Length: 166
Image 1: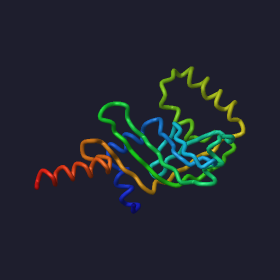
Image 2 (image 1 turned 180 degrees about the horizontal axis):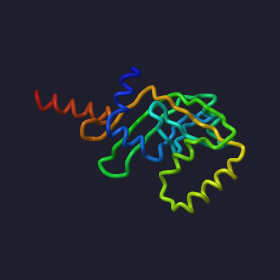
Image 3 (image 1 turned 120 degrees about the vertical axis):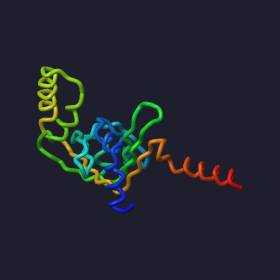
Image 4 (image 1 turned 45 degrees about the horizontal axis):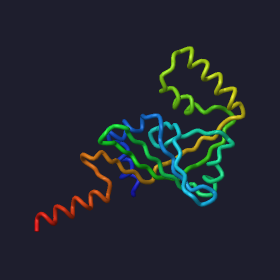
């Protein structure tokens, strides 16, 4: 997929709405060769998906060995709205709490007092810093079941149309 095609998908209003959500599912290949899919909070900075994790997270050795990842951001209602993204993860070890991590978790409903307590806990727990997992999208697909469908379903719709036309 060409970069301008990826940008076109990610700039659609529904994609922007999904990119403003809190949670994505990060899929990667673990060190033992088996697939993993884990929910993780994220933020979209306009060109990259940024996820933050602990420096001892089991996913880090796997991502160093094979940085290719897939992300799924979706809704819970029917019909689902789904944004699929593929890209390469770059690991950025930092000795502080990344601003993105604080922004990511800023969308949860907390009182001002709860927010102060939460941030103090975060700063205490992650005192040695975190890892920013930065994913630059190289492929994207938006599925809304209105204007776009999964490719296999699109194929079935086309076959049915051809059969009914004949």
